[in-house]
Length: 186
Ligand SMILES: [Fe+2]
Image 1 (cartoon, rainbow, N blue to C red):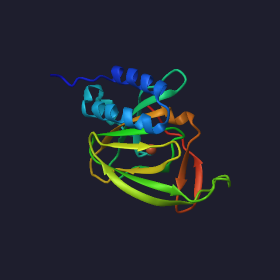
Image 2: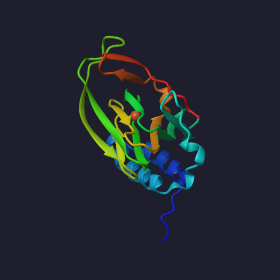
Image 3: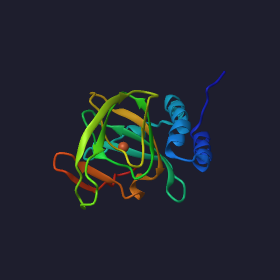
């Protein structure tokens, strides 16, 4: 018996679930297991998906997005010792580990968000996700991702909308700042 599950089938499932789901909790409940299944069955993974931008610290490879930029699926690989500082996505996110362990730090926002460019964050908790394990982040969620290992890590990221089209933010918790977060995508 085969556990074959293709990227194409995943995208069909995403479209159906996104059309039916009433809220983000339902999206996480239904998309999560499928993302995990696809992450463990890596026929779709190509050698170039392991290429990262040295300046950025990670490589963002687009696998799919709809014509209106919704339902975006990426492979993101992370250089050893690098990561993404505290950020939001401006949409829901389902991340499934593919290779290696990635540390996920969740933040709580303490201010009301009314002062432009300013944000007060404190760390809520952190955990590490390995192959097939999930990190689900709500539209309102803020997190950071770090590769603490000495090898490249890879994860499969699914977002409600392409992350360069949501007006999302990157934060500096020490400085209390918030700015626009655009990533280089290949
Ligand atoms: Fe993220």
